[in-house]
Length: 166
Length: 223
Image (cartoon, rainbow over all chains, first blue to last red; front, side, top):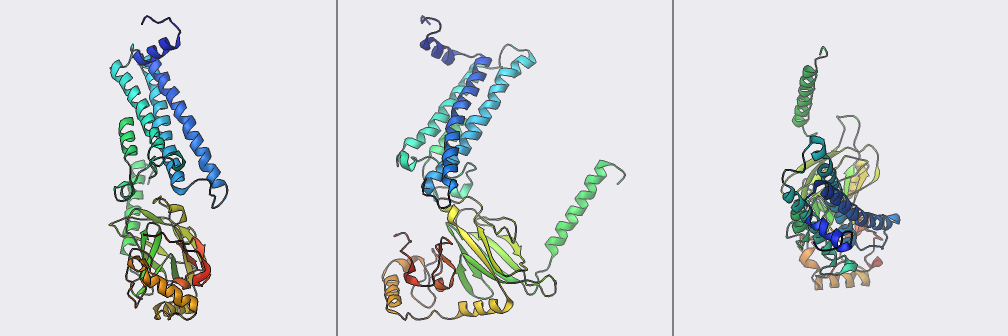
């Protein structure tokens, strides 16, 4: 709006305002790629820890946080957005409609997903600090109940973040 | 079954339900050793209800026999005191979960003596990776000997080191969590330590035991 076409501001503005199913589909896939890289870095750190028996590379809880966040990110912030992304891009073309049924709701869905992912990862920077890997969830991505109950684990970042990504 | 897939499914269903029924109707062999295993964060509590033995992190069983009349299999009741764990000794049986408020069952029926290694196979928190387990299969005579040793009263401390260890243990909060039979230490939160030095390892399998109290630094968290 008023900005020159092609400038950074214009591109950002276009991404934020868009309700176009093709653009949103690509944005889903692009954000998925971003989380894919982060999850891949965590997977590398996990493998470095496992390279030698009884390695002291990562503390036990940091390791647990990494594999939990790796699993959660790969499923909810990589695999599912990629499925959404392709569906968003292709399905309206395949059935011959101009856009998704509720384009604004579709755009809203993308932004909720993106911010929930960022919110989930922000848990790395909370309480014990980054070297203890913050208060990121450490209960496994399946999050089986007694271990996730209040008596056995602290912190709420995971539950909130997961809730938002749905 | 004349190539009709419905009757195939029906047949498979009948065979399955009959087999399940047969398994559930199986009688407990008379010679079976009964063991109750309770998973804790992050160690295994082992009870022999018929023998009155309580130990931890290792299960001693007699060797079984391929002849059903002479077999002495071990029946395991699997329970959990806190979160879910999973009993897994891959050379002896498949994984079976230990679930709070639910009794799961499993059998082991070893035909060779020796030590079989296992560990917790359901992610259960910080020290899940170090929640190790040993199944030690004895000859029948060896098992009887082990039972007798476990049932004997704990020996009084002899050497000055042992006397000092005894004093430190009973002068501190150790007694609130651990049990030593025939003493004031009656805690049930941690492993029963009555026969600790007869176990092959300490710290849920983390350190190989030297059989002497002074062999290790103190690895126990202060409460």
